Length: 488
Image (cartoon, rainbow, N blue to C red; front, top):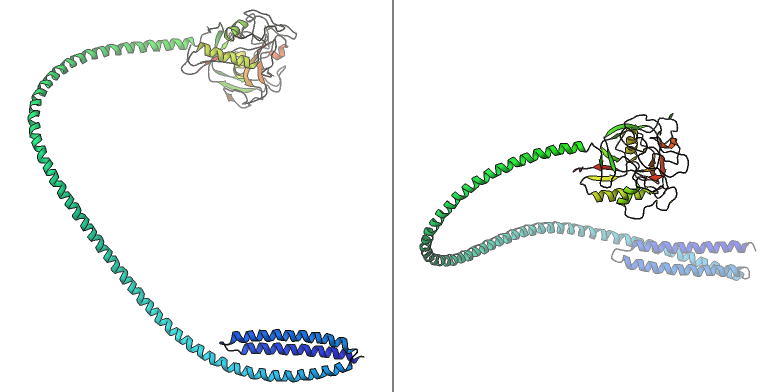
């Protein structure tokens, strides 16, 4: 029983060795083939390799079969031993055949190498001849191209000569035609010359008449020059009068006047001041930071708050205070219950009504209002001599209290006054002609009112309100500005 596995391994090893020998024979055959029959031998070797693979498969099948039957058949072992002996014999024969074919292949390979060397020498010689032929061919091509170029140039010259001959022939025909026409023209010119001689006589008479007219015109021009000199003198006199009127107008622009709807306008000169309050000022709030302001353009400000009569002359619609509480009706009472937009509309409408070139009515900026309220005083007294609260009272007639030094009434109290600016923090740097923030939620109100305490009516005190908010103690005053050309 122990001999059977050993014999099985020996049979399997012999089969593998047999297959390796067959593969080695196939490789030797492929290497020994000559260049002319190499492809065919490779095909044959591949066929033999496939056959060898088939034989390997058969041997594998046989081995599996033998392995299965070794346990039951001692006679099969004897047959396998005989097959192995035959395989050894065939292996020795294959080795001899391989050696013989290898020797033949080496001889054929040497012969092929000799033939290849001869062919390489012939190819090298032919390459040199081809290079020489190509060089001569290139030279011939250059010569042919040069000849063709010369032929083309000759053809171009011939064509140009033919064209010139044709042109000269046409020019000769044209010249002959012109000569005939000129002969006809000469005959016509001779006839025209006779007619022109007659016309010259007539023209001479006309020239004499025109010379006489020119002499008359010269006399007229002298008269015109005298008149122009007189007109120039009149213009100079008028310019002198205009200069005097301009000077008078400048003086009048610094004088109060009453406009077309009865508003008393007071001149306010340009200047600079400190706007806001010091921190230790009684009643001062954080939004009243003291800073320098310069106003570069003079303006007029209404001496009083806009009255009901003045408002109704400009705005023809139902007045906003009509039917409202805490209102005294009368021409001298301030217009109240006025929104910011109502005040702006009043200014725009009044500007259009007067139509004075360069003159514009508008609400004062916050800086212009405080500058006019201070009236040149750095530290004006608190709100005194004014209609103040607290309490619920209707506004009083304008102009009953004393004016400030610049002639402005009720700058403290009576009604709060709309300003042009959006409400916001001051620019703490020194500013010139400030107009407040570019945008905001509320508009500035100044001056306090009859319903608010005196602390709110200070010249530096700032209040704000929604532009649509209306109150019995809320009104406005206007300013008028100028741009060139200015109107009085």
